[in-house]
Length: 243
Image (cartoon, rainbow, N blue to C red; front, side):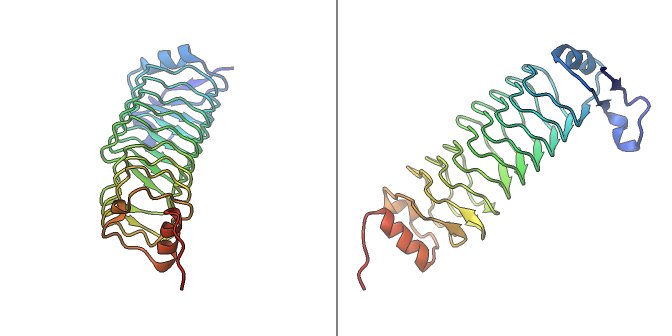
């Protein structure tokens, strides 16, 4: 059975601005029909796994506790959307516009974001292990308390950012700009690929630097590290310290 409830008769004031969708089953056509109402969607607790939702306009929509495994949003407009408690492993977000979107407490492992517009997009308490964020527009993109292990993050700027509990272990951060960034306790760059990444004047004391292979010491000019990290970086150069 398929059920859609319009917010013309909302259950509370917060829902008044939305078309609320609580569907037992859904397909692309049902979403197209609901979007024609003209209000942003509030989608709750739905399993949208594998559905083709590409090239649709979801501006201002909210997705709460949805299952999005393999869901295809390629080319869709996701500006000012909110995503909370969603599970979207291998979801496809290629070439989306997600400016000012907020993702919170969501599992987005191995999701695909390449060539997307992620300006002022935020991820908080999310899992993005293996995610591909290459070739994205990322002005103002922020991560907080998020797992980015083995993610493709090439060229993203973290200039002057305060990085809170971010796990970049084994991630590809080649060409990223970490100048003057502050890494808080709980951050990790262990075994990350840092070719041409810049760390000048960064405070790295809160980060695990184990396994980093530093190709050019100038990458870390005037950065702040502790003695343990100094040993880790020296080891990455293939040197041994004898006392």
